Image 1: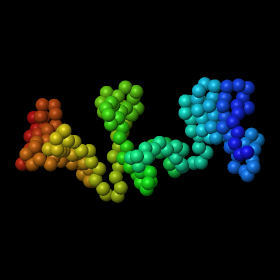
Image 2: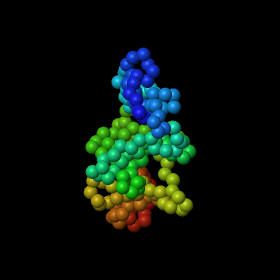
Image 3: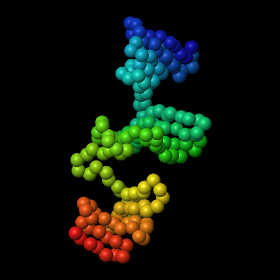
Image 4: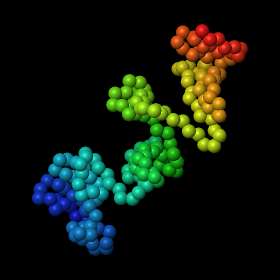
Length: 193
């Protein structure tokens, strides 16, 4: 047989599932691969002989995804693993074509915190120095886009070699608070104070 179910060599408590790739191999010998373990603490480990978490998936090849969570009805998957250079990566992709796909965080509500365990806004970044960085390729434009719940009067802060403030509505002023200390109106006039 090429598989075995046992206690993984422990005195009691653990349940292991081992396999052997060799024809007529014995999954109970030293050459077998431990495919999965359920520990006495109710932890589950895949591709490991132990598990310190409720679910632990080990993968021994660099720059590869270790797991995929799929919804076949939507043709979408969420991949977890590492990229070249040793960075942790969470990636959305389609199942059929393996093409990159969008990821939504807290789409049903709630806040996201980076560097903080108590986020107070939809995106709360706590950092010293540069908290958010926008990089482009070659001479592309980097933008921050602002819009109310309607589609009217969007505004942008963007850089294309020059830092610019921009609004789509020709009748909208650009103000720098407090108390409108600096006002730029659509006619090109600037008021200070």
